[in-house]
Image 1 (spheres, rainbow, N blue to C red):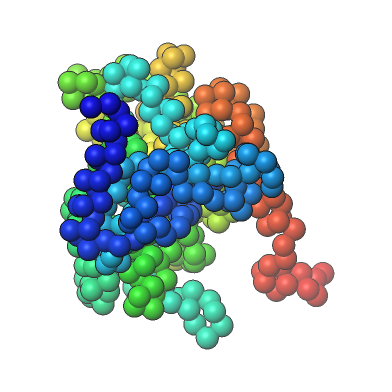
Image 2 (image 1 turned 90 degrees about the vertical axis):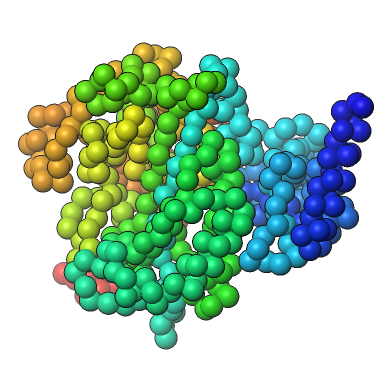
Length: 451
């Protein structure tokens, strides 16, 4: 049987499996450069169209493609990855298939999922797999009479973390998320109330980098749909309230070889890291200013990345480029032979975030970089003198600074592809300029009749 026949048979088997599950419509889904889920509904009978040429879209209508309005390159096709096809329990009758971008019959280098696939291929050439555990923190909100966001559980506790009473008020919503994701193959193992009113975290077990990224998009789709059905807003906004802790998207990273051995771990090391593990940390830290542009890609992200006491709960957001053993006050935390990268937030494009992470890790390995000395104390308690003495630098404190760092990082640009980075900067720079030119309520209150 030739490849075409094998593919045809696989598509027919997939159709039959979906029909048996009651599916009538397939969502051909991809992400734009911001990481927002995009797509269209296609009848199950036309599944072969999605897996073949792909579902067609007007390229210029999608953020970050940079495609023209006419000619062969004006069409963007989402070519379905058949291995990702699965029913959506929260939308009976519908299934999702994840798509890769194709333009003019060729793989589209502006596709964020392909960006990640290219970096994964670099790991595979070494016989390695990157495993990623993602910890989404999010708010469940509603709006007041003025359209302002309000936590679904408004309370005045100084430390609402792990509050069972608040957790129980939205237990049905959280349970629907859990059961829906479990039916999609997630291994959800805990849900808790986080450090701010109306803030939660849902944890599920790690997987390889590509599946982890696909799963995170599915998590967002599920959580948003389920919350909306009960009149709530699901939000991954990094810092929706100035006087409350923000939301992160911590990434737990580990490498394994073809035999499943941990590449980054060494129990004999003082911090549990192998030489490769330390080189990975060094690569991450050296590129952190540029990585911020992908991992903290919104204006609002930088209202989270500051150190200081919150008026409610506990803030664990990083602000300094350092690492340490089980140290949540540094941007990189090492534990059990793996690294937790704490810079990322939920406004990121998860494919670009993971692709840039791999590129930084590999640069550390290829350049045989060594990280600075680990810091195993609470740096939130340090004054400026201590940071200078330890030569610890600060993460970018605005989106503008992060974008400038990305533009200046030649190694990261080369690894990711200058076309993708150029388009990313072309999309994000006007966002920063729009913010800089906007006038806020704070400015009216402070300056309208000043001095």
